[in-house]
Length: 446
Image (cartoon, rainbow, N blue to C red; front, side, top):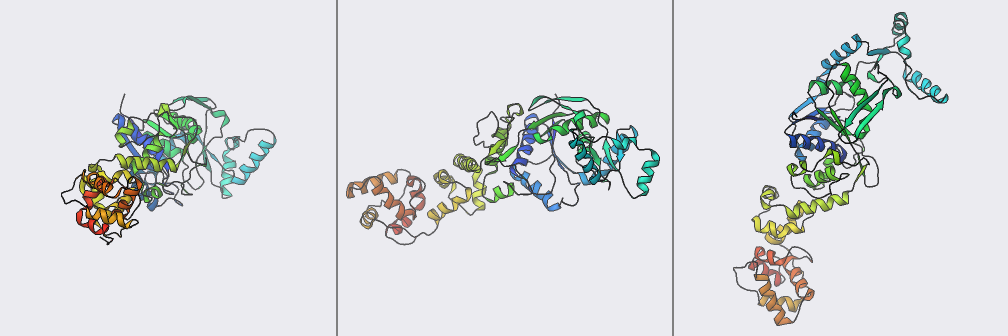
């Protein structure tokens, strides 16, 4: 079986949200697992709403997730291909001009509904004579162009939904080109898929009906029909649909919130599948779990609270080698010993700054039991310190004061760190060092 060629085709009319990321990742992971190619196709034919800023934002969002396209194309630069396909379809009688205004079409639709008929276009334009067309154009009307569907049942084996079909007799002939010569989604998408050699089209289930129409156009143009897979859609935790325009769960917002890309990728791919949702450390590992055939057919809820848990678990298991460069960028040192001491207390990577301040900065101690803390100061051992120093020291303090449990450990933690929670002090104390520890136990900022 040849390596798959897949595509992700967002319109640059807003920032990507987590639902878009699901589609992008399912495509990218399929290509990655099978040694294929991933094409980013920017559907920017809507010149009124498409912007370079949004296009750049899409590239940035994908790169943050770890997705680097093998090829990027822009539909606005490929109009000649679509024009050539239009000429072919007109020549074979599969694309025909229509002159109705939107108001006329709406009145006709209401009449059909009132008579209990489906609101399907009645193909009245096919009955126009050449003279009638000339008269309409003389009045200033310009045609939109509809594709003449074959009234047959189109069948395909869906990679997610299994055997699928749509009866094209229940559909209106789709408009492929507007009066002003611009294109709707359908034709450019088909032409690009054929020209770019796309072998697998993986997209949301809201495109199922489009598939039958696209298969008919592909066959009319003499192309090979790709494999189609329509995955279930993501909703918010409350069941609300996601929208780029409304900014629901945008990748930029999640990134600005300090979340790890693999936390988002893990949840976006595994939610609504037969796989248990869990943190996955790399895209290669995730590719082994992404199985289109094991996706649910029901919408999947994306819960930000679950995302927080995944994010923390990824950080808690992250090796120092993966964190090292990012820690340096944050101005955090301490090496592997510091990272391994504090990572279990992180919800976001940025939280590491708090613990670096405890270790390397100056903090004001909180002294709640002066007698205990003074005795602890007097018993503070000489360096060098290691992981056993804390137990040996606190055992001595316990023996001298009789304090135990929380009454022993909390006053020491508050004096040494200024906080009532945090990493194990057995690991943290050697990083703080004797000088700072002694000063803090004396109640001095250090």
